[in-house]
Length: 415
Image (cartoon, rainbow, N blue to C red):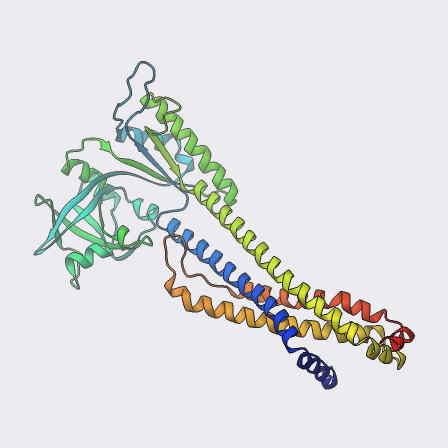
């Protein structure tokens, strides 16, 4: 029930001790402010990292081979390894039940692409139809590479949105012909967008068979990419992906006769395992931020507790009179707790609003590769408010218990 006299007592106590109340409230507000800022930036880190992983499928395995750095089985170091269609087919057959999407890749860097008077240098890649899902690409117009395109080695291409803007401006690109390296014409059949942004949208995808034929690659490929079939849980999928990665690496070491400790010649990257490690690190960072923030709040709560002890000491005679007139211990406890919770909550809410306001102000300005849009979500805000109320109750608990245990006769003798 609302008790105006109790509120008058609280404001009268604050008025008599303005500086003391201000300094203690400042410590609580600072604690909440620091906690909100730290949690906001931990969310920004998580958003940034997730954005980086969204550039490609999270459960992707990428396979590349380079030059050997160590001799093995009588073979000299410095051998240039080369993946071929047969390697791709063999791996597909062996891991068929574990593969979700698959593609071989043949890349031509800095190819000149012309459309009428417009031209630019772009990366051209021969791929299979599954590249769309492995790259997390979304079609904004037309279609992607099809199985028929690959089977018939058609001269068709899907281009990134940025490439379309560069070459075609506001003109519709579908069905138009572009010239690659002043040599071969390709028909644009699709335009895609990529969560990786501009850098990923300056590429042209064509059928792998066409790329190999046009650029005289024979059966050579530069890379193999897979996504792993999701298991029942994230951890099970990670284990499956890691096991598949190790098995593929061992297969290729045997195939190319590469030393077990040669980490340069064969590289098999598992983004799912990397994602688990990084998200685990983010969770650790968030826990550390919570620890620091809560520690700062505790320092403020201790200050509030000290204030309430002083208040109880100053009002010992008053409390004795109240008890002598029949006030119950619970009423005395609530009187102290009420004041403690009020001071802590008001100070904490000020810190919360200042922290959220600052994050809203600077959030659009903070955008790096691994920190994007730091902010505090609704759940965190509610959690912070709960912490405020609990902190206020804890700050006043011991002073309130001391006040409730005061004996009227001793209180009346207090000077």
